[in-house]
Length: 223
Length: 152
Image 1: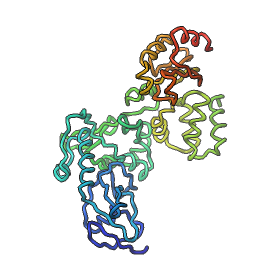
Image 2: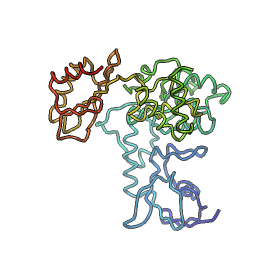
Image 3: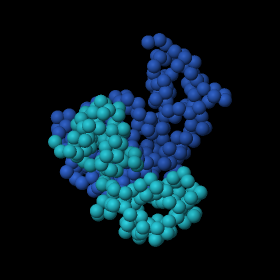
Image 4: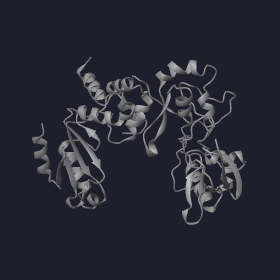
């Protein structure tokens, strides 16, 4: 692995070729906010909070730092006005699904709740961490996505859960700890905060194998 | 093995049972049976070695895939902007009445499925209705009744 020189926020940094911008920045102690990124899992790029500007002058463009691999001489800006504005808008939109976004993020980027959107507090930001953990690390495929756009949501397949969950995660449901909005819960899992903490939950819809597909689609709002 | 699954197998084998061909396989299955039933999905998942959550993800992502039975005759009414201003809603009402179906519904005898679509690319004909690939510009209630009669 060869070393490459990159410039992040004006700082000259040596990094290993093949790293993403996010990894290089974190190694150098530069903060880039993320929600859908986790060291154990492949980069996914769904939350878009990690956007940064690369290049100089006319050729500047915005990329997701968790997916973009560095190369020799790359110039990165992580906190420009444009980037902060992007992050503010993303947080504004997320606030309508998740009302306890870390205050530190909201204050940093000045996000405020806009009344022109209808609140839909599902506490699921579709980061896919639970789904990816279950699929990529455990190979269990108990959780999945259905739908597209505003109706997209996480669903749970109870027959898969009955088959895999007891052996995969014998002590507790590990995927629950990956949820950045706090917790997911379901009839099958029970809810995570066993200590009686009253935290809001994301509720994945159950898809039973014997249930009529039409019924499922109605429940997830697809018909 | 039933005829249905044998046909599915034939389609899957046509693509060498490759995972990468999933969307194409599903398209072919849908073309054959007009919809994707639970059995065919389960069978496809088993044959391709894919988990069901992946198949649900794909089939609910693309609007073309239908997880509910579709009628033998597909009736689409355009409600795109150009058709809308030229009276697509009135046409949709007439078609709904003629077929006795609301949009996105399939008749009990699986004869007709009524769908609304957004632009068919022939705005000059608007408001447009398509029956089994045949385009019609602003058909009257009588013309719709004739179509209903003609279709098997």
